[in-house]
Amino acid sequence: MPMVKIKNNIYVELPQGYRLIKSSDTKRLFESHDKNMRDYKLKYFYEWGLDKNNVVLIKESHGNIDSVIMFRFEPDLSNADKIVIEMLARNFAVKSNGSGYLLLKVVESIARQLGIGKIEIEAVEGLVDYYESLGYINTGNHYYDSSWKEIIIMEKSIA
Image (cartoon, rainbow, N blue to C red; front, side, top):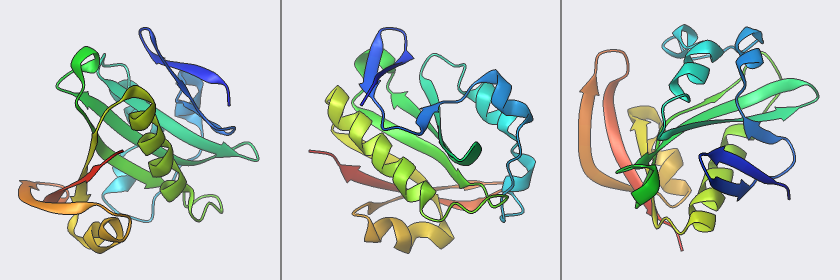
């Protein structure tokens, strides 16, 4: 697997078909089945990824963007003890079943490569069971978001 610079002097191995979002991606087709997600265009993901502690990865195949994931390092990039996944979205404009799951596994691999012991996911209520099936635990913490309603904080220890 090739080494990819994700921020500053931080390099990780990414499998073929996974890469950082680029400005040229912002004009590409990306649609979600979720009405709340329809407001989030690839331009939003790209701009969010410009922050020094944030990373946006895409999974690409057959010239299409299959899915996108946004995560940040906490407390910051140089002292990260966890990765927080803020958004994971599959592109319903293309056939991409399982691409969100695969992106999640890539972020888990990044955490292992960097020696970061925990991943936290900000999950919408309807996906709690799904994330639990992948080994994430409901922390009991939550907050309310005006667009997404109840957000449940889930976490997984990464060995």
